[in-house]
Length: 280
Image (cartoon, rainbow, N blue to C red; front, side):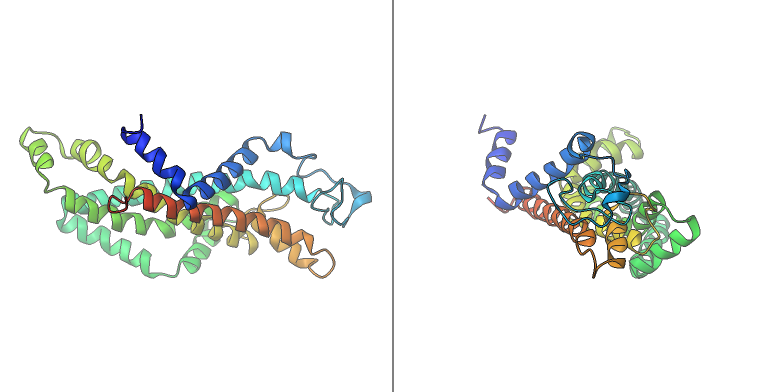
């Protein structure tokens, strides 16, 4: 088993500290999101008016807010929003970036010039400014903020996929497929795309923290999730109102956000090392 590719990968993974720590952190976030109703002692929007602004104690582990809502429950349910941001945001970015990158790298010519000009324009505009503009047009909501961030971040995928496609399309196995009359879309999807999956996995893991933080920033500014959502960015924003009175309102959502981003960063660094053929 240890001589197979899967066995070698598992063996290297167990020795990679960054990968293992990142994997454990990400797994804990996923499990928290999936089993939130069982973990949280209260519903995230359940008020306890008699216990408003209660400091952390044995009943309310992370204290309560101005409506008496349990902050621990809200942080736990907030993991679901973070997971939604990660999945939906990544799908949109990869779909746009891979499509543009494949078309540019494989066809070249006018298609490459036009699409890469659009990619460069998107790349050059400050991400936060463009995201704010998109949210202003689409309206304030979590999904709109995810779309806004994705429309900003897809260009990085397009550049990488274009470069990989240009290096692969002249390989002998691609020329053989062309000689046998394979259609171009089939060649791109069947022969070229699978060969860049490792690079895409690393790119996704490295870009994911930025997607999570950017979406949280829009929620912090009031342009993403709206009350009574347990979104961590929104919770930090609301906690700023009472920062001198109830510091725990912003601290615990902030720590959850940092915990998640650090975990994804470590996982990305570990994957980069594991999938690099030059690192034994």
